[in-house]
Amino acid sequence: MNKKMMLLSISCACLIFILLTIPAMSTPAELKNADLTDDEISFKDTYYNRQILNGINVPDKTLESFARFSVWLEEQGVDAEAEEINLIYIDDDLKAVTEYAWVFAAKPDTKQFVAEKIAAEQAESESLFSTESDFNNLNTSFAFFEQKYPVKYVHTGLVTFITVENKKQFVADFSEEDEQMLKKISDIIDKSNENIIAPKWSSSNPDMHGDMARWAAEKNGLNESQIDLIADNAAAPDNWGFPWYQEIWEKNYKHFCGPIALNIGGTIITLAHVGGAPGSCEEYVNIAKNLSNDSKYINLGYSTHFMCDISNPLHTGYVIVQAPGYLNGFELIDYITEVEFSDYHAEYETYVGSNWTSGRNFSEYAEDVNNGMTISDPEESVKNLSDYSYAYSDTVVNKISSNQYDNSLFYATAFCIDEGQRYLIGLIEYGCE
Image (cartoon, rainbow, N blue to C red; front, side):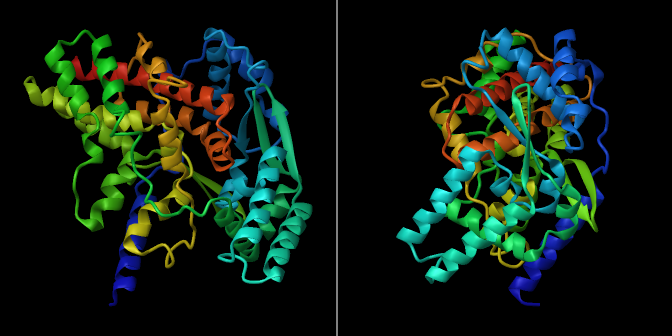
């Protein structure tokens, strides 16, 4: 068996194992964590109800998250209209059909950005257009695609939900030619596909994992030595070494938890919580609960890592399109998915890291949280946080891919950090019981 076939076989085996070991339906999260306040219920019933969405496939937990976000902004004293906050959410049925739904299921300003990128590529480079006809053919194909599947916008509350007018036809008729056309546009939007996506919020400077774990430990009244052990080990799982054939599993799959929607013969099936972060978080916090020495707090630090990762929307969404970034190091990209996805994950984490203690000052939204979630089942709590974080993955990809570092991206990120910090406080309390 040659190297390519061996690697392909290993990867297929891993994929089959993953699909066989994940639930096809969501396990109910802890009710105490998921309960909505009266104000949140009012927002959800008024703005994020099924009648308004009219067939757009959006998980219930996503709608709850948008309702909670709306109330959270009011609690922060933010005037959403004045700040021009508008999130986006792409119909999950579209994402089940193509990994490139984000290319065409976008707001008009983003589509204009895409058009400008295509024109700039044609003018400046021959890497994707060998002839003038190649450029014209792409433009013609995309225009025909948009006419065939007109985009439909449903704006309600603070969210623009995006689908297509004739979704049944789209699910049934979307072709390999359509996929390749959208892939080429994706390549044009960002060709910086040089770095493998890092499986981390950030473990360098600043150490966001360490900071969030430290503040969560402080809120639990631990002593300085215990706090240092937790904070100093919170980033460690990103730096553990593994043989190359374990890298995808240990350093990527175990740092992720989110849904995957699949188009099986025209039927959309959603796998609710794909990824190993819930189990990894629970594994280390349960080790900690049975110890009383320094190892207790070291393992608590490890556990916080996996909870913290899930407060990042790109650890809960776009798992398939991000996978080639991981696979690229093993030369599998051309043999398995043929999907390339620019390093939006790393760009997003760079944005958050560079605005951690200055600029947007995201650290304040973690440090100022005083009250944690009540956690009795860490695995289910990670899944619950994943459900809420996933709601913002479309907004993150849309904004990062079009260089729009605006208030919508800022507040969506701040909310996820705030929510994640509440779970970290509860996790450490659980581990110290």
